[in-house]
Image 1 (tube, rainbow, N blue to C red):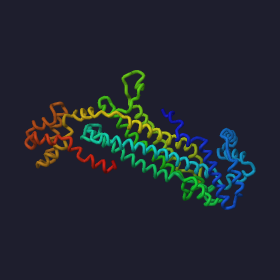
Image 2 (tube, rainbow, N blue to C red; image 1 turned 135 degrees about the vertical axis):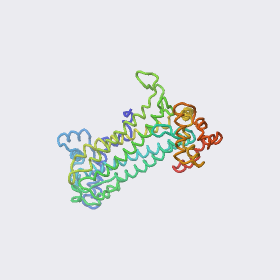
Image 3 (cartoon, rainbow, N blue to C red; image 1 turned 90 degrees about the horizontal axis):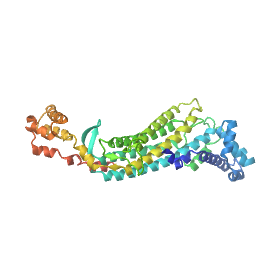
Image 4 (cartoon, rainbow, N blue to C red; image 1 turned 90 degrees about the vertical axis):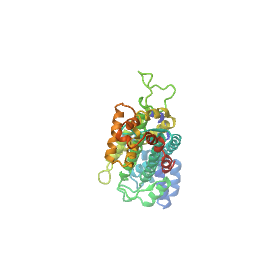
Length: 430
């Protein structure tokens, strides 16, 4: 299924074509900065901009010999430029180009993910409103607890997604950096003005201080943020998976015309999209761990992080882009069964009102331990199948002494539990 997204905007950001185009743009911007200071002739820069180009096949061929991608790139570009290539890559080290290129890639990738989150917010807001008053059972430990609404579940996800959007924007600001300060970050053969100029043109922030590389804690934070977002999507998907179980069947993810649930059992309608989202969230967490391992480099730089990052950044951004789009698809197209929700609500034959009974007995002057024991005694009879909870309470002389049938009817009222739904929606901005 991920293959459907192989031609997406996200995928193009991590292709060699985009990478080398960005690297070339950085090299030219550095020359523009030099020309402004008359370090490089302005006419030479003009000629370079007219001639500069690269060929992916030629770069790969050169790299086979040099075993260095940036050297191969610079050599290939030089073939297009000719004599003026003497000014190319002057005062720069490879990581100046690579880390600044990564900043551009992360900026563009983050923009797509931010758009995805905003789409998810819109879908969640609509669905939360649609089901604001759709009563269902709330579960703790997987066991029926007290009534809630399906809209409140979605409002909760909406609020969490807002936090994730805020986290991603912060992580984007922290990771979209540029660095052009030379071999160990001292600006030994390039001046800070060039870094400032290039970063401004690219929409990046110049890093405050670097070694040969931008420090990898910023990238670890970015990857951790992607993992947190993935964990939220896993949470949403896990809830839907449970609600789709045959014995629950309150919600189903979309099931398309012609879709097959099983090669063996034609009746099957499985939550495969949600399961896929849960599986991919594990990948995001694993990649975040790898990013944390990249923080500790030897001295001013080693290359141990480089091979890892060629995998984790494309994989995580592509996976999260996919997961967010699939979550939008699931939420917008899911089937909701209010009748089943009400049927499930009634399965415990009134036990969901136990806390209200407890409080009512305490308000009558009964000590909490005694009131709790009375309510639990009637509840255990109900669990064992001996009548409903209200009837069992009335048959207990100790309880009937304090609460009559009319009072219990008032206590066993669903509307009581939903009286603050509008206030909660207002708090989360819905």
